[in-house]
Amino acid sequence: MREELIAQLNAWHEADEFEEIVSRIKEVPTPLIDDELAVHLGRALNNLGRYKEALKWFNKTKEKSKKDPLWHFRVGYAYYYLNEYDKAIKAFERAHKLDPEDQDAIEFLEWSRTEAAALADTEDVEDTDEASATEGETSEETKR
Picture 1 (cartoon, rainbow, N blue to C red):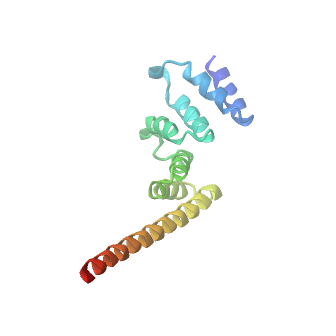
Picture 2 (cartoon, one colour):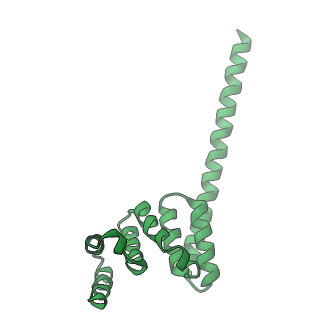
Picture 3 (cartoon, rainbow, N blue to C red):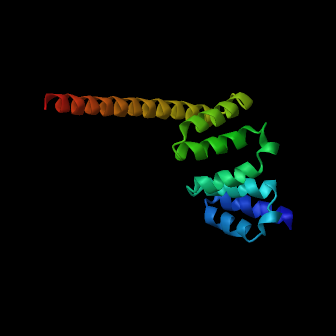
């Protein structure tokens, strides 16, 4: 029965039937969702754009997955699409360290760094604009 379930989950994944995966695993009582099912569920949720939910399930397997580059990639992927680039960078760096040949991890690491830098630049500009506006208000008040 277990082997059939895993085979079906993999088949649905290959067919991009991610809702089927979620529905089937959610039929299992939560305390009985083991690490393998949690990873399948997290992967399907990632593919559905439900990144916060995916992270919840990936975190269930965190201790056992410390040396799994694919786990780190999936976590980084969720953080990337949540615009949490610093966390994504850490996850992709770990994935890259564990599997230096993974081109997807390298690509997402570069994208994450680029997005984080752009975000920092935007925040710097906003801070500068805010400071200029405050100075302008002070100058106007002084003239009165």
